[in-house]
Image (cartoon, rainbow over all chains, first blue to last red; front, side, top):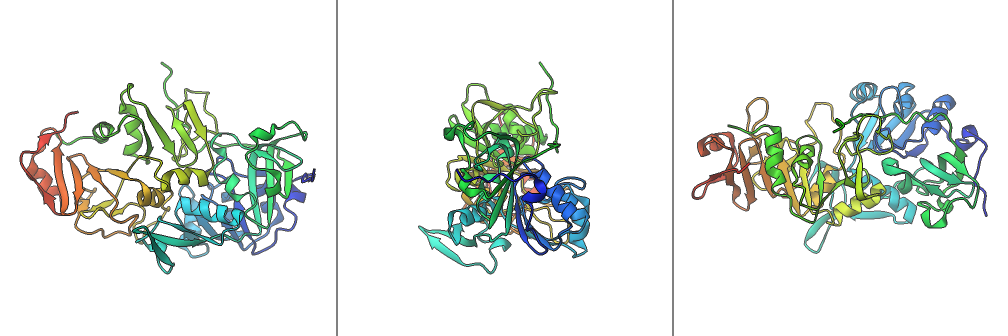
Length: 233
Length: 218
């Protein structure tokens, strides 16, 4: 077995430098790498390009890095719910590239899977396709979208082991599997790091080969953005 | 009388066929799930990675790890599954999801849709809308017939940045049900008590009215 376990979050983010491109898993605040984000704030690296479906909220998730002006550019599909983000975007301090959600996922997956680019129908005929190569297949038009190139991918899983195997829970899975192995170094944080052999190989979502570092996360807040409930009948 | 949001949702629920997978957008479309008859087997997909969505949880049973694409806490029904974002959009682009219902700011008579960006205003992003409209075989738009300023949202040509081209099949508004045809918006039904004349006035794009237009049955 090849061991991927590192002692703590500080060791896990070692090597992240100014102007790096980072992938960060999560959908809204669901399944985000909370520990890695806190550590990046502490580390004070700046000029970051962040590939993440969303940009957190003012005081949590990527919002924490935005507050400290550590992010130069965001590549996302949806970025509401964040006043500081809006301020930086409108003032021109922050560069924002909005891309279709499925394209975001597939550009990660392409990087993971060794494809330089993929053709997608999403965005054809819209401003998203401007300046991009297009091509017809079987009478339908497609846009060529390139695989991302990132220095680090930070993902969060429910359970993992020292071999780097990961299991996700619920919709906290989202972009995390697509980003695993899609950057030069993939760092996984888990709610529960179990002994090797405890995870059933049949149930592994992401095999350890896609992960370079794994650590036991702490103090998860797992905030809910839109708490919606119904009356008990 | 023109329909309210729930009325629009109720009418669209009639378009949902047994044995289909459906993706509902944020806003009016979300309400449609409340009006699907119990005898229909329909599974709702949310693009953040769940198939077989159920109702909102009861208090204290919310789980931060189980949400829909609107980031609301949800539950799952027996037979549900979770998956990653790439697989979720494989379901969408691969046309495994049968029906997509979403809101819009503008729909053009050729089926173009604009619903993600107003120039010079804060842009939040397209989320999964561009993937959904580029792929789904059946796309229904749920929206009000006119905007807050009273301007028609069913127009000749979209003025706002597009989300997708030539993709909308049907539009259900507070006033009418319309089908997109090669010749324009074909009026299929009118809301209870709403006249064809009222619909004509509220529609800027080419409106085709053939024969008697029946009232919606809701």
